Image 1: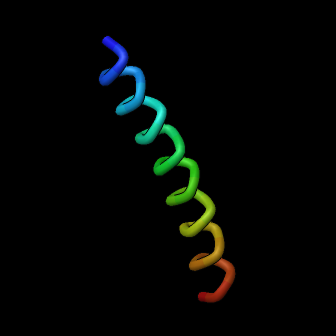
Image 2 (image 1 turned 90 degrees about the horizontal axis):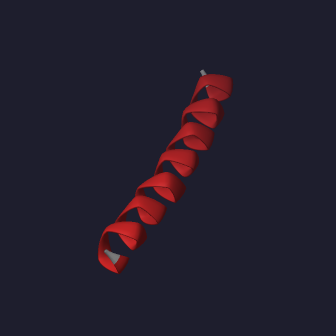
Amino acid sequence: IARAFVDMRVTRIFGGTSEVLRELIARQL
């Protein structure tokens, strides 16, 4: 259960960072 919680947390953080990266890329374009 703890492992699933950590995975969910990591994917949530990764998803947030990719959203920021997409915004930065869109601005550069």
